[in-house]
Picture 1 (spheres, rainbow, N blue to C red):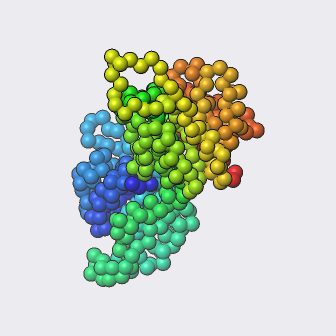
Picture 2 (picture 1 turned 90 degrees about the vertical axis):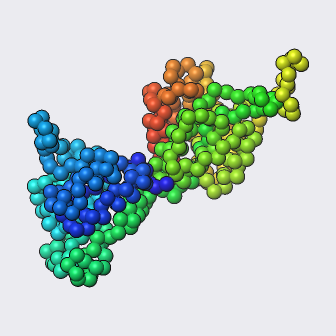
Length: 404
């Protein structure tokens, strides 16, 4: 369960004996859920084979500007590579490669990609003791740091020359930890605790039958997954759903009834920074649940029902520091009804769905929302995949956090 999940990492490997550690770096990144593209210099192939790296990364290893394996030569676009990556990690970074990075000497694919990058660049030097201490090398390292690159310092230990001292590349596990620490610190929701509800609730009539609705939970799961990807500590309180996948960092609490969802949200509420109530909670429940299955021949002329607790209003009445966002599914006078709920339930914002919008609401992979806040004009979005809707909604949540 790593903040590196779904990150795109370009691993640059230069010519150093420490390159033998790079298959483990790739394995650890892949295990963390990252996609890894390896770009290596020609001299790096002396120490580790492209076959090994392509096997552990499950991607072709790149090393030249042009792929000439067949008659139709293909250009390896260094600009696209640099823009593709969420981070570049150059490990090991030899003295030669450090010099080329510092001087913008783009005579190989790795340096050209580095110069095209818009993402953070990490570099882990590896060389012999005297090379590492040399003023020219130290000057190159200082220049790279001044240019915004992130140094993963070399450590002391046994070196390939037989000497013992500073110049040994940091161990793979600590290199991965350095990347994780960076992304965790830079994540928009780092340190934030967010509770998200999803799916329907089922209110039992008897041990077999229930009152429910058609909510698939897709919207809530999309919100939880993106919030976790952005570094939040996410708890997803989910009613009965099927087929939804969660980010490894999402803690799922499965509930069935509105009463169970109310308890879960209430228990979490005090320590929570934000709650997004996207679940379709049943408004009514049977007044009495039959202890045995009701036989068809016995008949069931009426079901006496009673209102469930309004979870959103309950949380709104106890709101202190928490940001509280609700959902409203409306048909007529949608904006007016949503604005009424926004005030009446003491919410910070409300997300409006309309039953009149094709492709929105229950059961769809898409949604069309309008985001409403107090004393602000409604923000209307076009029909989008629910994963994109989640990004729009959490953009607004980030703005609310920033304004606090």
